[in-house]
Image 1 (cartoon, one colour):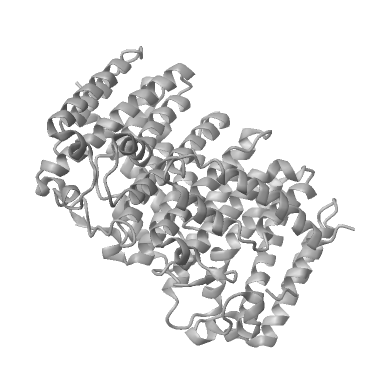
Image 2: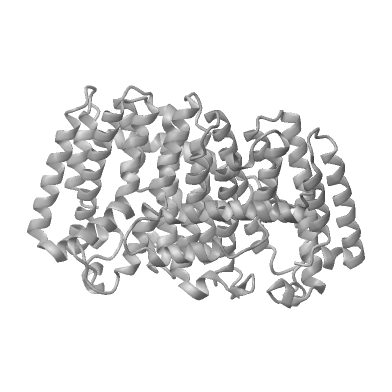
Length: 295
Length: 295
C-alpha cells in the first residue's frame, strides 16, 4: 500500500530532481553565490506538503503527476522565497531555519534578498513553461498562483503579521492573518491541481475548501508545537511565540481548545474528500498525519 | 503631430490610471501601509520608457495600446520592485530616489521589502489577467517577462553588480552586467509588444535587437550623466560612481568615446526600425530623445 509517507517521499524525490534541474539553468557568470543560496534554501528538505497537495489533487482528478511538476516546483519556490525573506534581519530576524543557519547568515543579506527575488520569479518561469496543457489552463492556474502569493494573499498576510506584532489581536484578525499568510498558498495548490486536470468548478471549490480547513489546522498545530514542542525535533526554538507576547491560537483558546479545533477541522476536511470519486486515500492519510505531526 | 514626448505623456496617463486601479484592489484589513508604500513607489513619476516601448511596439505591429495595458503595468511593477529592493540598506543603501526619500526611508525596511515582493507578484497577476488575447500569446509573453526579470536576467545582473562592486571589471563583464541588470527587461518590452500583436518571429527578433541597442545606449547615457550631470535635475547625487571607484563606460572608455558609442548604438537602433512597415516615427523620436536626455 502507498501510505501518505511514501507518497510524500516519492513526490519529494521527483520534485527535488526537477528543482535542481531549474537551478542548473542559471547560466550567467559571477552568479555562483546566487545559485548556491537558491539551492541551499530550496533543497534543504522540508516536508514538501504544498507540492504534494497539488500533485495529489491533480492525480485525484485524473492527471499524471509528472506533468504537473512545473507548477509543483513553482509552489515550492514561492514557499521557499517567503521563508528566505521572512528570516531577514529587517523581518523576523531568524538566524536558524530547519535546523541550519538561515540563508542570509550563510550568504549575506544582499544575496539572500536576491535569492528570494529570483525564486519568486523562477516560480512563474517554471509554471509558464509547463508543457502539454491547454494554454488557457496554464493562464488560469498561474493567475491563481500569483493572486495567492501576492498582496491579497501571502504578502498581505505577512503585512498583517507585522502590523499586529506588538499587542494582542482578536480571533478574527488572527484568522485573516493565517488565511492569507499561510492558507492562501495551500489553497492555491489544491485549486491548481484541479484546474490543470480539467476538474469541474464544483470539484475545484471543494478542493479549495478542503485545503482551507487543512491549512488552518496546520497553522494551529504549528502554534501548539511552538508552545509545547521539542525544539530539537523542530530545529528551531520553542516557546518563542509566548516570549514575544505573540497572539496565537494557543494564547487565545488555550491548548485543549486548540487541539479540539484541530480535530474538528480535520474531520471537516476529511468529509470534503468524500465528494471526490477517485482514490483520496493518500490525501486522507496526509490530513490525519499533519494533525498529529511533531514537526 | 504626435511627438515622442506626447506619446510618453499619453501612455503615462493611461498607465497611471491602470496602475492605481490595480492598487485599489488591495482589500485586506491592516495593509494600509503596504498599499501606501506600493503606491508611493509605483506612482512617483519616472519616464515610463519601458511600458511605452511595449505599447508602441504593440501598436506598430497592429494592436490597440489599451489592450496591452496589463502587460505594460506588469513591466512597470517589475521595474519599480527592483528599484525598491536595490535601494534597501543591505543593497545599495540609497536614501533618495527620483528626488524623494526612497521607499524604506518612509515606510521602514520591512514594509519596503514586502512592497517590492507584492509588486513583483502583482506584475504576474496583472499580465495573466490580460483579456482578449489568445491564451497561448499570454503564456508566451508572461514567460518572457519572467525570464527577463529572473536569475538569467535582471536579478542575475544585479548579482553581477554586487560581485564586481569592489575592484575594476573589463568591458565584457560590464556589458554582461548591463545586458542583464537593465537590458533584459527593456528587451522583453519590445518582444512582448510584438508577441501580443501576433508579429512574426523575425519581427519580434528585430524588435528585441533594437531594444538591446537602445538599452545599452540608455545605460551609457546613465553613466555619462552620473559623471557630469546636474544633480538637481537628476534628483540624485552625481559623481557617485567615480567616488565609489565603480567601473562604468565612462571610466573604461572616457567621456568622448562613451558619447561616440551612444551615437553608434542609436544609429544602429534606428536602422533596425526601418525593417518595420508601420509608422515607427515615435519610436525613432524616442530613441533620439533618450540619447540626448538630461535625466
